[in-house]
Length: 312
Length: 151
Image (cartoon, rainbow over all chains, first blue to last red; front, side, top):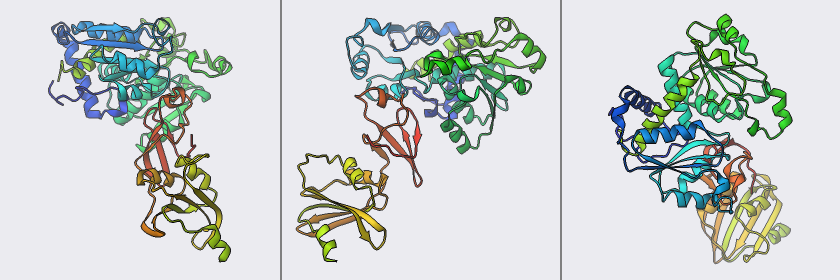
C-alpha cells in the first residue's frame, strides 16, 4: 500500500482537479486493499471524529461516510437539519465552520453554493471533504465511480457515455474531469438545454480530449462499455417550467439494453433515481448501481483513512 | 499646448497613472477604491490627446503613494498604463503595470450560484490563468471568465 506515502494526510478533498492521476490511482488501490480484507481495518481510526455538515438533503453520501467511519472504528457527529441549528438563528456559514472544526478531526460538508467547500477549507482548522457543492463538484462520488468502472469494466480504453442532466449535475462535472485525466473519450447524451457547460467543454478541448454529443441514447447505446445515468434534478432549475420541459425525456429499459447494448455494457447511476432507469433493469447483468453504493463505503474508508493517517 | 498643460498640471507628491485606455479612468478609480467623498485630492483627465494612443485618460492622486500590488490591479482594464511616483515635483519611480497572479475582492464572479455571490462574508478571488488574452478562474467555484465585471 505504500505507493505514494502520505499523499492525502491532512489534505482537503475539494475538487477532483486537485489530484493527479497517480494520486487517484493510489486511492483506488488502497480501496481495493480495504475491500479484500475489510474486517482487519476496524480500529484504525479509533478515537477520531468525523463531523457531518449537510446544508442540503442527502441519504447516500451522509450514511456512506458514517458507515465508512464506523467500519474504521471512528465516530461521527452530525449537525443534523439546519432548521434545528444556529444556522436558523442567523449564524454565518463562516462561524459555523470555525466552531464545528473545533469538534472533530475531519469534516464532510454539503452546501447548495458552488465553491462553499473551498471557502470552508480556508477557514477550517481540520481538513474538509466536499460532499457536493451546488452544481460544482462531488469528488468522493467520482472516486467511487472510478472504482466501480475499474472493478466492473475497464478504465483504459473504455467508451463511456454520460446521460442526463449534464448542465447542473455536479457528479457529472467531477467525473468528466477525472475521466479526462485517463484520456478517455466520452459521449455526452442530454436534452439540448441540459448539455455539458461550455466551460467544461473548453477545458476538455484544452486537454485534447475528444467527445461526442447527442440527444438520443438509442443512437449510441451500441458503442458504449459504460453508461452513467443521472437524474434530472428538479431542485437545480431556476425555472420550474424548464424542468417540466425535460422531465421524463429519457428512460433506460431492459428491452433497450438487450436489443441495443453491448454484451459487457454496465449501467451506473449516482442515485437517487426518479424514473430514468426502469426497475426491470435492476436484476439484469447490466446493472451495477447498487453495487456502486457498496463500493462507495470502501472508497470513503480509503479517503478517511488516508486523510487521517490510518493508511499510507 | 497651453490648454494641455492646464489639464495635466504637475503635482508635488503622489501618484500619476498615465496612458490609461480612453474611457477607463472611472474604472481605475473604482479598482483603487477611490470613492467620493475622498480624503485624497484626485484629478482626472479623460480623452486627452496622446501621440502613442490617440486618446488617453490620466488619473492623479495627490499625497498618496499607491502600492505596486494595488496598482497592478489596474492592468486588468488598462494594460499599458504607466505609473509615476512623484516626490517634490520629480518622478522618483516609473513603471508599467502588469497583471498580478491573483485578483482579490474587486471582480464579481459570473456564476450566480458561486459562494461569493451567495454569502456576503466571502470576498471574491480569481487566479489569473492567462494575461493575454485575459483569462481568470474563480478559486472557489472554478468558473472561468475573460470579461471583467467590477463589484
